Length: 395
Image (cartoon, rainbow, N blue to C red; front, side):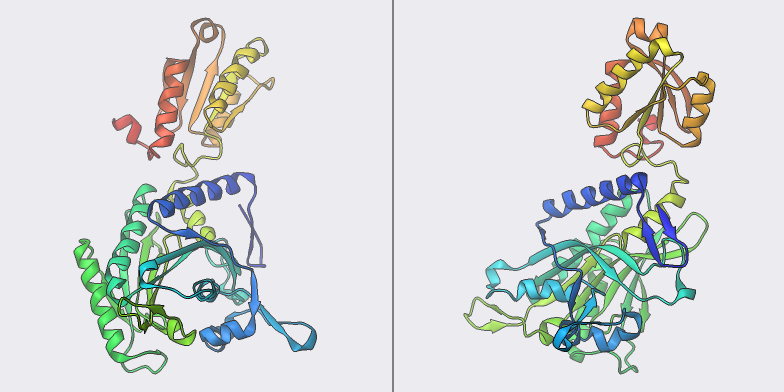
C-alpha cells in the first residue's frame, strides 16, 4: 500500500490489495450471515441530495467543490453513503414486515481534508467504508444497535485487536448544532447505554461527540505504540428519515416513520489496514498474509518437486510462491524471513524421497520435516479457522 505523498490518496499495490480483498470477503461473509443485503451506489450525486440530507450545508467546507454541468446541474463527489441508501429504501413503498432492512456497501467516499491534516493511510481524502444502514421500527432500535456492537466486537476480536474502549457520543444540551426532538434524543441515549451494559461493555460517555443527527458509539483502538484511533462506529439517526420523508405501513395499516442505524465495523479500510500493518508489525496471520508460504528448493535439480508442492498448495486455494533462483538456500531463507512470510518450505533430496517438507515458521523457526499431506491439512485448517499468531502452536 502506497500513500501518494501530499495528495491524500492511496494506491493499493498487489499485496495490499490482497489484504483488503480478504478483509472485504471476511466482512461480506459475516454480513450475509447476519441478514444484510448488498447494494452498489454511484460515486457522485446531485447537490440537492446532500442538501436534503443536511450534509451539504453542515459539511460543506470538508467536501470537494461541486462539479457544474450543463444547465447549472451540480454534482458532488460522494462525501458519505447514507443519502444513497436512503434513496434505495425510498424506491418503493415499505411494510413493517420488511423491517429491519439492512443495506450494506463497501462505498468509497471523498473528503477535502486540509493538507496539514493528511497523514499516510490514517487521514486521507478518498477512503472506502464497510458501510451499512439499517432501517427499522423504533421498537427494533435496541436490538439492531446490539447486533451492530456485537458484530464490531467480533470483527476486532477476530483480528486480535483487543485494546479498545467504547465511547458513547451524546449531544451537548447547551449546543444548538443538533437536530431532532429532545425526547427522542433522550430515549436513544438511554437505549445505547443499556445495550452496552448488557454486552458487558462499560462505555465512556462524552457529551458533544454525537453526530448532529443522533447519538453514536465509537470503538476507539489503542495501537501498539499507545496512540488512539477511532475505528468502528454505530450511529442512531432520527433525522434522515424525517428529512427524506421516509415511511412504512405498520400493522395498524397507517404510515409510520422508520429509524436509521448507521454502522461501519472497520470505519475505513485505509486507516484499518494502516493500523493492522503496525499491529502485526508486518507479520500477518496466515489467513491474511499476501504470501502464505514459499517453497525453497536447495538446488535446481529439486525444482520439479518444489513446483509440485507449490501447485498442490495452490490447488487448496493457498497463496504460495516458489524461489527457484540460483541463490544458496540460506539466502532464500533470509529473503523469505525478511518478508515475514508465515511458512518457508525447504525441499531437497530427502524431502522428495519421503514426500515431506522441512518447515520454517515465521517467529518460531525450524519445525523439522513434516509429511506433505499433513502440512497441507494443517495450513488449510489454520487459514479456515483464521487463527492468529501463536494460536496454532498453543493448540
